[in-house]
Length: 261
Figure: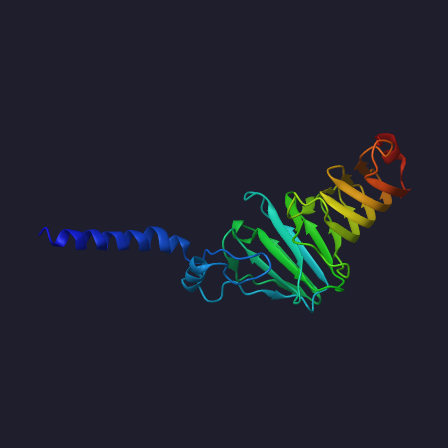
């Protein structure tokens, strides 16, 4: 009887490992932001326990317009990471693994509907010189640039609609030298775009009853903004800082001038 005790203990340990550790981890693996491949030995083992269809990217070569709609606020922020690569693709994942997401495609427009926690991490990889539009709808979206982008890279035109609230920054907030050569944004429907910790060469902004925040660690060479209805741009006092070297505001400027710092 005593000889069988170690075997019983071993069997219980294997059962515990399988049920309470390996099974919950199945499909959960570490990967880099620029690759869909697992990043270490344990991750490769977990991938083998996953369903084989997990991690299938969506090809963006035939897509000109990407729409991300946050349709559930129960699970917190939606995280969107954009980076430069040699093949354009979009992947949807949760905190651990990629999801086999079936998108809506209408012509050259791709729509991603974020409805639960398993879809709130979106990675968009784009080749240089590709002109795209990115429309965001939702009240808690974090948009980040991953790694340095080459001078030839063209960032997608950024559109915010229907009371969207988006925070746009560099993925590594400690890197204050990050430079984006050009950025084109269009805000409407009481949307708010907050740009943080970025250096931008030329910023073109169209605002319709919306707000653009350029206060937190932002440096811009030239800003051209067209304002409609009660739109506003919040930026540091030009007399006290050179965070915006040149600014030109046109359109309905009465509200902006009345609330300007």
